[in-house]
Image (cartoon, rainbow, N blue to C red):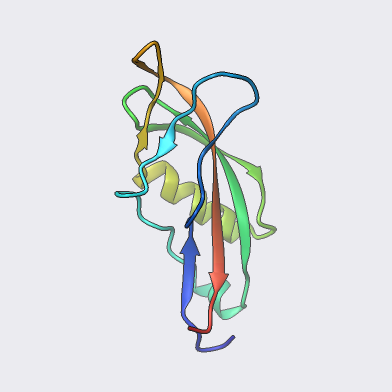
Length: 115
């Protein structure tokens, strides 16, 4: 794995609604940057997936980010949380055509690759 390229990927990931029929915001993958792979984690060959629980405001901005399921690495978890909190935008949930605040879950994967 050494010398391989690294990826922090959300490919194929979709925000999932919290249990129930409440509306759910969706990440705007066309503009959201992938979290950077922390150098120390890459050197130590740490990989993992973190599931974030995100409170999205009606304007698509992030109000709050929680760790719903840890990757097992505080470094990866914090990198994912900070990137989503500070740099991501969402397509807000709508109720009766009106944008509303909502919770959604976002999976983020940190994978080392050889290609």
